Length: 343
Ligand code: MN
Image (cartoon, rainbow, N blue to C red):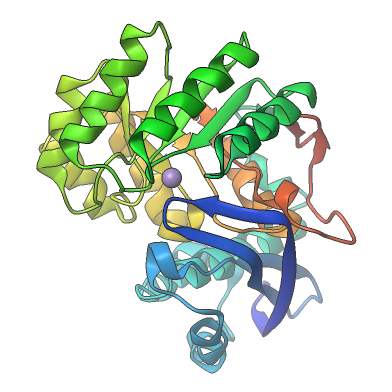
């Protein structure tokens, strides 16, 4: 048997190589909390919580303050009976990134005890995924240069942040498209267009001959009618991100026929809800992408293992660790250009 003997929270600070800017919000540094779960056999499982105030209303201080609560929840619990532990830790509803980090650390410890890769635990469908890289909201010239750099580094899926200035966004997407041929594009407005602006934006790009693979969260997260309007009135697949955190959100979006795709992030959902959202999506013919918040290599590893194991993601937006200054790479995967390989 392998019961949990100890759990510890370790605060880590990271600086972004360049400030990461989305519409009306930017980050220059981040504080993540590493979670270590130690079993009575001395095996350590590693997880990371990347709290997001914008998405989840979380702060690092809130996560750290929950350490004794988490100890109370999981100490002495048998990791082989992880579903029982998950039903307890799923109660961390106001700190989903902590839920994700703790749950992953438990699975990581379990897999180390079993001698299997976490990607195999999740189903072992793929050994390799391809990530995009993201272009920030900046002056147009800088957006084009950033996209060119990403293109020259061999990335062929480019995510473009928009939502602050419709005309500049159109110009930036046009110019990036012209200069990076043969790529697929994800455009993410992070909730900042009105439904009418979003439809105008999409139709303008379409009539200019530009194909967008994913139009992510064009309008406010709670505006499901708005999402539905954009979905059926624009030529590109519309994807929920901020709108889909729990499995209940996913069910609601399906019932409302609001979107074509879900962007799953472990930091929004934890492990069990992420799995539930995958299954709901498959049932409803919703396509899937996986995204990240501000995870370092040890935290992005969680999503790489999940994405390879589940093998169900059409797009992987797992580039946060590539934006951070980090002394040591600590993922359980190899990063070769855009490829992330678990075996
Ligand atoms: Mn997004």
